[in-house]
Amino acid sequence: PTGGEEMTVHVGAVNGTVGQSILLPTSYKLTHQFSSYTIQWWKGNQCIVDYYGQNCTIDSQGFPTWEAGDTTIFAEDRRRIEFYKRNGSLLLRDLQIKDEGIYIVSFINPKADIQKEIQVWVHETLAAEAPTIHTLEIIFIVRTVLCFLPILTLVFLICRWECRP
Image 1 (cartoon, one colour):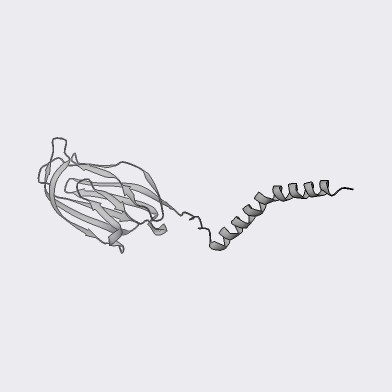
Image 2 (tube, helix red, strand yellow):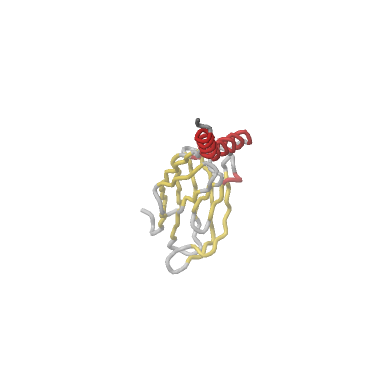
């Protein structure tokens, strides 16, 4: 039983590319003003974020409008993680291959223990190589030869025609 509290995960999977940022979007509703609760994000068996919210006020639909709380980020790359306490979402910056996996968000209070998961896929990109000066020189030479080849052929044919006995 959840006691009326809700935790919603808005996507089941998120795709990202190395170096980009992705949002793991969630939202939650509470049934009582000034409730205390905990939101945790896990990847595998490692807790990444632990948020303890208290003295929360809610709007008529149960969404938090103000709360006091403490956020602890346990991940080794703290600078790459941002937690949004008003909706429980998690932002992962500068994605790395190691970020791929299943993320679990838990909403816990005395009346509820709700867990949802999001699959994160991280893809590598193959950066296009910038042409080197050597490559540009070769391209210039080939273009020059190909442009003048028809002219040289025409001159050769005219000379041959004129020099006939």
